[in-house]
Figure 1 (cartoon, rainbow, N blue to C red):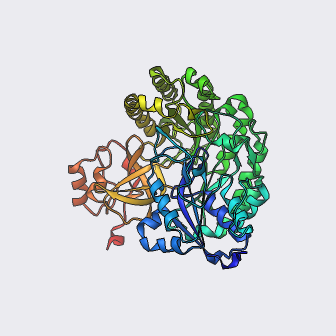
Figure 2: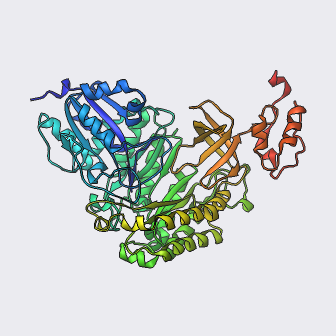
Figure 3: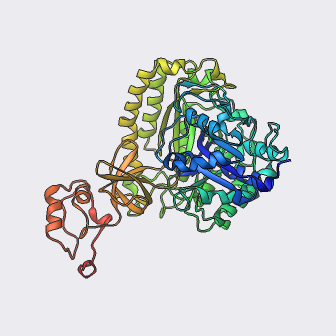
Length: 576
């Protein structure tokens, strides 16, 4: 019998992206944390557990020694929705095979990779289930497989799902692993699970493969936040659920009391948290139970941090596609849900709760911040019965949202990935490939005619984004993001130290990103590039500002915006 106390275990995080679970940096998913907790619960000392991200292995090849020398290698990964990522690059199949080939001990693979693997991590692809040369593949919960594998002396396990007591225990016992994440502690956001499974059966989605909704009670989630806080985590997202409004109920109807207990308890054990966001919210819940949903949204907006986004899975505004794919919400129902979230959550800090949507013409607070909670729209292409008219239905829906003066935090446009066990598995990606050219043209039109003006409405010039983490340099700019759900990409003129954090005032808008300047912008110290980034300030005006320094009072600038809203002047004595 293998003694767990003597085992050396290496966990490799290849990152996950599921319909209701995200783990690409700066996010860390539940998988490595719960897996580490299961190892400890089975008798492995924490100091015998090593955790690496796939990017960490790429950057420092010597870390592959931990893969080779481990008695047990655990790979965690799998992408069941396609995306583009800034903070990390998910593991490709060939890299996963290399892990199995390198492993000198027993190797186990788990996570959403169990649903299937494509040639690449992108949309318009088919997948198939593969073991990628690992000794074991967890077809149930990987953390349960790990625990049972150790109990059997590394001989095997049953493919089972963990229960709530195990999740509660393993979440606390495995919280320590976040200290080994390269983003810890300042630029790391922990994905939190409130439930798994879904009451609905959309044709493409892997979430129903987890079964009907099952909920962790508030005390279980709150205890996990408490443990993570003890290890320095200040950023959290309730992202592991199909519908946050249905939390603690029957899987469909809202339960405001459960949300109040959950959010209030998180704030109590982590009073100094800096981010509390969510992900999925089902618009059909709002359409069917509007008043209870309003109450739940008010509770969320009271406890969350600004810039939060409720992702709406509309998927298609085309009624033909909706019927063929068992989509549960119509365009009209989704539009009403957008209105309600705008009204109850679309206010900005300093404004009256429930006074949304907060539009630039009506601002009561200067400088403005991002609204507390806005809807985001998910659109998926390549579904059954998709036709050319589908694209116009979607565009018309988005135009209606904009023309009504409503706010959307973002529009996520993807192409389907087909997985075994879903209705799309027979059709695969053939429709997506057939419509590839149409899809590209339509996506560009959405970005130009909807995303750009909507972003100007959500984050108008002068909006302050606090704690922007600077990530990379490109074309003379430094780019970074806030921590949170679907954070804006922010470009700042000049090359600033990477890894640092600054507050930024928005000065210009792209399709899904903004340009900003440091906030407050010191006119007595600002660079030429920063000054000319201000709308209406050209080279000549910026040159005059620099030549006439130091300024003792705000200069009279011919600018398209009121610079005094986000600019300041250092005192001449402070500049010496």
